[in-house]
Length: 391
Image 1 (cartoon, rainbow, N blue to C red):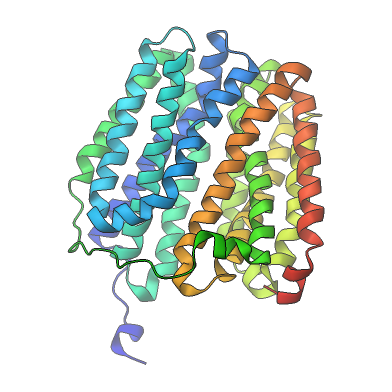
Image 2: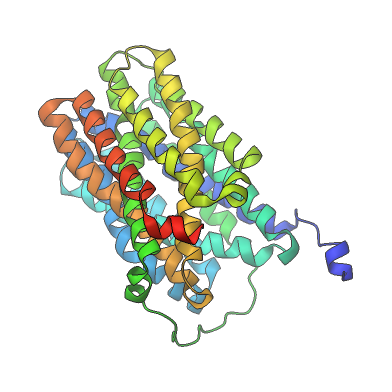
């Protein structure tokens, strides 16, 4: 064992702390837009419009993410962290001056999606770069915790600001935090930029021809549709049934998913990712189905807990299956396929189920989402190739 293995470099170095802080700040800002449906509804937007406005951010993410890694490696990670915050600030401030939902809302959400893709890829790559090889998994885990907690913190803080000071103040606050993040980003130290070598590995289509990859991608698409659609509509659904403290759903989800990641994250690696993920795809659908019966806060909290536990196992497990099903030289493409599958499902799900909610109501929407997930469960759990590979 080398000296580096015996005494690995400290985890909490300046660069790692800085990048983790910026990640936390960015995702606080970005996840605060889970409250945007309330504003859209107040301006007269229907459930269909909510679905389209919220879902269209995924459109730009869908197309930009596969290329973000290439340009980040070529032009530098710091540049795209800066650009991510700059785009976020520029596309947040105008929301305070819009008194109707028109085409400008859609443009703003598209820019939000572009901002997310650039920051997500660049900050993730920086986290790997500034952490030592011996502590990289631990570093990524800690970074992930500080992004996940904002599913709870951002809606909670945002709901307080909106209730006490109004939506416009909330938007100004988010703009200031984005500008603050932009300023702090200049402090990032980055190594010498290197031009990425010409890609000679498997293509995206080569990856998708692998049956384990295609089956898992379809399942991740379905889970993404359920996850993102539920998160986009949970606030206005709760208000529609007179539950004002809807943030308890985000809080219960966050606590349970963090508990899974921190204390039971080893389970899929030990017992098999497909074997663990399969039943929790079912529980993901069950938690959404239960939302159609919610009439009080206690049941809303229970739904959030089950949803968080299911997502805590399903998301990293299926991501890992897709990545491990492809050769090392195609791992970046496999990661992009996973990201695009989940985001694409969320985008389409928000569009389609927003229409369902407008025509038949929120409870019918949740039942429809659950039925889709149950079909995804059967498709995934009965996959012979995943069973044979024992991934």
